[in-house]
Image (cartoon, rainbow, N blue to C red):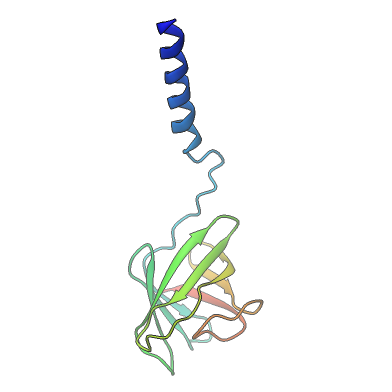
Length: 123
């Protein structure tokens, strides 16, 4: 009886541990840290950590944003900048190659960004 209980407990623990692991490689690749400049040179994103970037353009300088990469090529962006205003984070489709980052702000507005698809290149 003791062996059955021990076997069951070990099986349960193994299932819980393995279930918490990523199975399909759905974890998105991180955005390379550093400065990314929009193709039209109107916007700069400075990714400083795996969850924070700073945005600069003609209207704002070094304004802070939080971000999180989500499954299915989505990025969640939340304003945390100097204006101290409460803005709900927004989700956007994004794609990334070795030297280009494209974020779709056209389908959903995000504070501080133009309502269009933005493409950035790594500086």
